[in-house]
Each structure stands twice: as structure tokens, then as C-alpha cells.
Image (cartoon, rainbow, N blue to C red; front, side):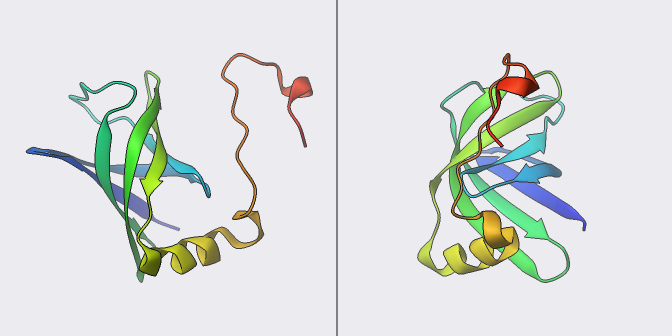
Length: 108
């Protein structure tokens, strides 16, 4: 399924691909010219497939050479159900994503 996101903060905006999405945030491909760090607030307009557009507010939670992880700070009430429906049975679970811990120590 094709999914893209518009990242907006003031006069700065980028369009990039969504790599992963969860109930607590979204991982996107880092666009060229990215200059923001942990904690920066953004408006995210996610377009998923042909019919779903979800607008949320999120803060930068992590930045790598190739990706940016955002944590949702505000999901409008009218977008909660579409997001949970997209996630299916995983919407009530928190994502566990340690950067340096081996896979064998992760739950699940």
C-alpha cells in the first residue's frame, strides 16, 4: 500500500514515505535538508492508500541517518477511529523499539 506524509513546521515542509506506523507514532524516511532534532513539533498529513488521510501533531522522537521517528502528541478525535482501524488488532499495544538492545531481549 502506498503511503506518504507531508511534514510541516512553520514555513518548512517536506514530503516523504512512511516506513512504519503504530498506535504511538510513525517512522518516515528522512528527507534531504532535514535540520530538526529530538522534541521538535510537526504537523503530519499522512496519505495512506487511495482513501485515507490522517492529520496528526507529533514530536520528533529519534533521528537516524535514514529515518525520523515521530511520537504522536495530538490525534484529532475524528481521526482516532480511522487510525485504529488501519492498525487493526495492534492499536492497543505500545511499540517497543530499543536502538541498541539485541533482538533476543525484546518482548514478543
